[in-house]
Length: 172
View 1 (cartoon, rainbow, N blue to C red):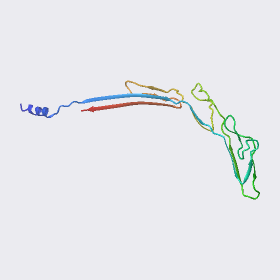
View 2: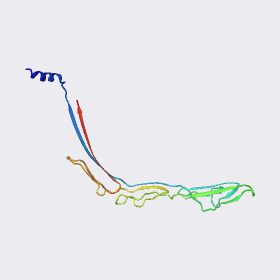
View 3: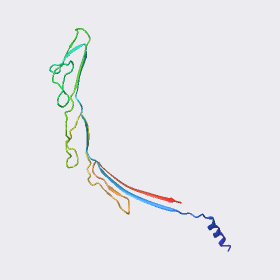
C-alpha cells in the first residue's frame, strides 16, 4: 500500500486537459507570362511669335499679327508662310522671338499582335514606352504529394514561383 500512495497523489494532482494538434501543408505554383504593351502620348503642334517694339506680318495665313498657323483636319499644322518682323520705331529698343514644334501626325489604329504575342510594328508618338511580351519557352511548374513544388525557368518576360507553407498548431 505504501507503494500506491505516490501514484494516487500524482493522479489526483494532475489536471484533466484536452490537446488538439493541427498540421496544415499548402503547396502552390504560380506561372506568369507578361503580355506586350505600348503606351504612346501624342506630342502636339505649337507655334509662338512674340515681340516688343516690332511689327510682324504673317504672310498668307489668317492676317492676325503673330499667328502663322493654319487649322487643318489633324487639328493644327504650321503654315508655310514666312513671318517678317520689322522695327516699329527706328532707334527704339525691340525684341522678337519665334518658335515652332512639329507635332505628331494622327494615328487612328494600332498594329495587330503578331503570332508570337508581340506588337511588331507599333505606331509611336513623341513620348512612347514599349514592352515586349514574354516567351513561355520551357516555363513549367509541378506539385507533388511527397515533395516541395518544382518550377522550371521560361524565356524572357516570365515568372515562376513555387511555394510550400507548413503550419503546426497546438491548442490546449
